[in-house]
Length: 270
Image (cartoon, rainbow, N blue to C red):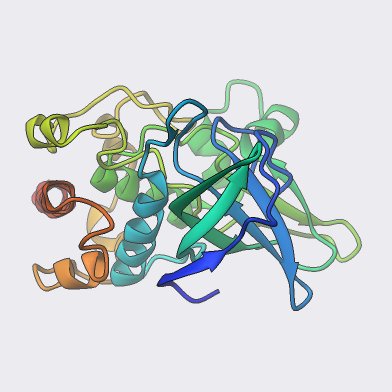
């Protein structure tokens, strides 16, 4: 799937939404749906939804920003589309921006959450990080830890990292990075909250690898200079935020860039 924003309003009222995600992830708190297009399974998700007032979050916008960030840094990942759409939930129609992605499983592969795979395959006393290193995933995990610091990802639990297996041909691989919605300024529901948000602070995070601190987890990375194939420069601002003016208020966009570039500067000077 190509990373892009579709601003023209799309009629997606045929989608049926559920809290149970039958997709390349696991059950969550946000509404999900799926469809098949040209024999490809497409998964959709909404930002935070309140039955009384509708869509109140902007997590889907975070997905497209982080998608672009990972591309700029040269980190393999799942790509998203941000779609302006009309949808229907329990008989009511809403207009919103939602995100879509393709299934990253290949033919014959099954998935298992990393935390479940760890429970059945780890050595006694083996840390989550050391388990991933033993399986050959150090480069992936180090990149994930560094990126999660940049975006202050608060939800990198063990089911947001997946192991893909093909029993017939005996292959095992880890999924591309996905699901970055609960990051950046997702917790700011008003422009006032966004303006007051300390973008360089370290907040408690739900991390399967390491600790509850995105900053503290950087200590796990031995060679911090080799994690990102590409440098992030100030010119990347346009790449990350292009087309989002009017989709998200400028105060959010400005603070998001301040967060990403400010935290990247901290990382580069460690």
